[in-house]
Length: 200
Image (cartoon, rainbow, N blue to C red):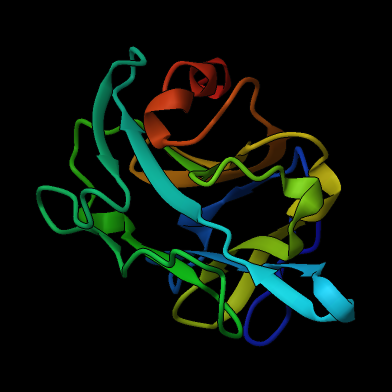
């Protein structure tokens, strides 16, 4: 783990934690998800592209682990507007982040103790088969990445627990996780219960 101020990068590896309350610039966190369509060879060696539909979601729980809210492709804003999903990408076409969720930490509902940042594969494609799939967590104010995971290395899974934002006192702590989630994770509903083991 390296921490810094100004232009010095913060780089969390799997299993590491960062106290966000110590950085006054860190009030807005971005979850960015990117991937490319799967390329296959068709007739006469022509390259065909198969659309892949991955989804970024943020799941909110209270201190007892009860579900409060899910921000995802079917509900693009939290009730109070502190968490905003910027739209569903159904194919993976395009450069950079294909899906983005912004979280305004000071505005998060006071009942929320945990925010789980998760990825699911609506199309059912396993991460190991998807080209250039990545997920990252960014400090919006400084444009610094705090954590990044290559999903292509995650094997025959369709769900990923990226990170956990946990309320600590009056601030937040970011925990980089990067663990595959069990079962057929096609929608956020499929991972609501498996995620609960990280709520500690």
